[in-house]
Length: 259
Image (cartoon, rainbow, N blue to C red; front, side, top):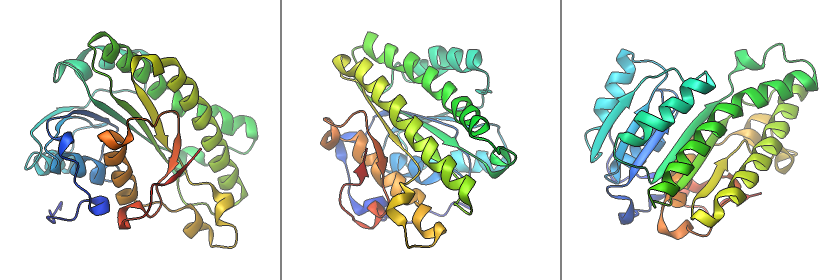
C-alpha cells in the first residue's frame, strides 16, 4: 500500500540537521499525514506517532515508516477529551524520547462535522472545539521544551474539505482567522523561550478568485510536508507566529505566503 519512491522528498531538498530529531505527530492516519511522516522518516528522525486507532492499515503505515526512521514509537490514546490530551502530552509524548524537537498536530475538519452547521455561531463553536485540544497540548509540550532547555517547533496543520458553497468559504475564512489569532498569541507567549509556534491553514480563498473553488482551495499533502521540513530545519529559526499557505512548495516553489 505504501510504496517507497527514493529521492523524491517533497520540495527536493534535504535537511541533514533533522537526522535524529525527536518528532511527535498526532492525528496521523493512512489518509492524513503520511507524506509528512515519510519526509521526517526519510531524514532519519525519531518518530513518536499518535493515531486515532490501531487498524491493519495503521500497522502497515508504521512498519513502512520504520524502514527509514531512526526509531518509531506508536500510541493510540483517545485525545478527544482535553484532560486525556493533557495527560498524553505530559507523559507518553514527552517520555518517548526524553524530550521533543518538533511536535506536529494534524487537525482535520470532516464533511460530516461541517454538515448542519448553518449559523456563524455553529461554525464558531466547531472551530473552537477543534482547536482547543491541540492548543492545550501545545502549551504542555512547550512548557516541557522550556524545562528541558530544548527549544523547538510546534506546528498545527489544519485541513478542510474542498470549498463547494458559501458556507464552506465562510468556514475556511473563519478557521484561518481563528488559527492566525491563536498562533500569534501562543508564539508571543513562548518567544522568550526559543520555542517557535506556526501553523498550516486552509489557503486564503480570496487569492483564488476567478479560479474554480477546488483549484483555489486545494493544497496537496506533499506541499505541507515540504513546508514542515523547512520549518523544522535551521533555515526557519527566525519564523514564528505565522499561518502558512504552502501551495506549490513541493514542486520547488518559493517560500510560501503567510499571515
